Amino acid sequence: MPLQLLIVGHLDRAEAKPLAKFLPRVLQPADVRRFAELQLALDALHGATWIPDLIVVIQSWPDEHSAEQIDQLNRLAPLARCVVCYGSWCESDGRTRQLWPLAVRVPLRSAMSRLLTEWQLLNGQSVRVMPMSGSREETYGVDHPALVPGAPVDVAVDSPDPEYRRYLCELLESVGHRIAPLDESRLDERSLIHVVDLDPWEESRRITVVNLKRRHPADRIVGLMNLPDPAASKELQDLGIAAVLPKLGSQQTILDAISPVGKSEKAFLELS
Image 1: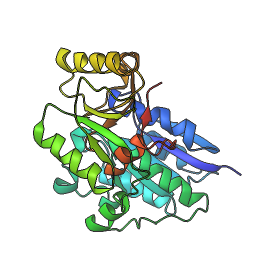
Image 2 (image 1 turned 30 degrees about the vertical axis):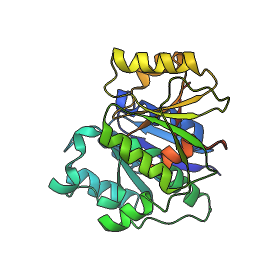
Image 3 (image 1 turned 180 degrees about the horizontal axis):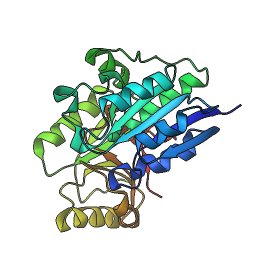
């Protein structure tokens, strides 16, 4: 019997579109029920013969859901696992509000990794369980486990922000990867992986990517953006960028993206 999946919220927002692509492809098999508003989901749960195993809430703005609605949801589905995927407007809710427990909240940019872990748990796989009453420290520990480096590779890092480039270089070197110089006249035949900061996405960054693919068409490019825009994915793909990651996502997603071994959708959003 498939697991019962309840999705609440507006998945048509640009910020939530990567999650909208992820849910039907990865959380399978599942009996899915979807509602744009929490109150509509609560009305459907009253007297229903089905009880969700996993509840995914997309929160678009602060105070979108009332304390009464959240309490009602907990009463109607007390054993369900719950993940509240919040957008950029809700970043401060963990400090200024206490409607949702800290342990169930995760930013949209990191939601796919958390949801995959929850799905593995519900399917009986051995994963680290996030207690719904977990503290801020426990939550961070689950969402940011020890890094898994993968096989060492040569990586060139390009960013207009020198401090951010230094951080990326230190991260990659700390797990054994080799930092290659940004040498436009490279003469050797080795292929590199390029980690390219795409912010701010303007003509100068576009020219950087175009020139890079023209000089070294076999090299793989992984892009980083503050808020990856799915609407721009066709343009980025046409420019030769293999994947785009959020800058503020987990460090592991960057390591997974540059790994020569194929990774699952837990790792990063492939452009398609």
